[in-house]
Amino acid sequence: MSLTQIVAAFLAALLYRLLSAWLSRRNGQAEWGRIPFLFGTSVLVVYWLQPSLPIRGLDYWLPTLTLGLTTICWAAVTPREERGFRANAPALLGLLGAALLVALTGLINLPAGILTLAAPPIAQAFVGLFLLGLLIFISIRNRRTSTGKILGVLVALFILLKTPALASSISAGLRALAGQNTAGASALDIRWLGFSYLAFRLIHTVRDRQSGRLPSATLAEFLIYAVFFPAFSSGPIDRLERFLKDLRSPAPLDSAETGEALRRLIIGLFKKFAVSDTLAIIALNTQVAEQI
Image (cartoon, rainbow, N blue to C red):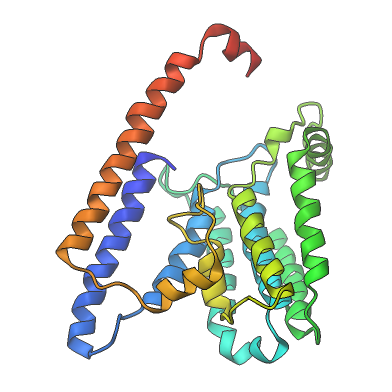
């Protein structure tokens, strides 16, 4: 994440907490709009943080596949009686709305720096989203949980993306489908933001489901856990059980908590942009640069 993205995410979270605390005092609620805010923000940040890629349309489809794969995994690890469409309709509609909203940005000229990805043609987006939605529908309607299949898919994707020769072959195939030159195909063409983090989190939920330790979670809660925006780009890996405990019982916002958050943010920014970047410049000599 860039400095601008970090500050923007922090300010958005802080403004929400202040607004939520004010509305909660007026309405007598525990915390107003917590789940919708975290769900909407986390879903949109998946698209916002995805870097631009040389393969046409891929920087839109990779974040979309992140959300689709997470939804299919939720269906695989959740008992059939708990994946009803009515109870999870807001989350499903929110996912569809976010994907369509980002796709429609291809019709307008956004200011530079707001969104790095390039939206695909609208017709392609509609067809792709329809097929992905159909796969999600089948997964939710499946009478049995299919943890073995989703585990195999996650492991296979991990091997394909992390093996340079295989990733280069996939890049060449995608370039050919997009009508682009395949001579420059490289494993770096498929920079799927946060996939390693996502895969480990989803594999954890599959293994916990297989051992009977996985707690019940709605689709919205599961998606927030999987793509939680403060941790999506760099972690850490967390357990669903502990995450749900904090999600459902938020700590009150007070001056001590705000001060501690600011202290951690400032220290983290100093380590990242002062210490880490300076050491990187020192370590990047001519020989290393040629190897990169």
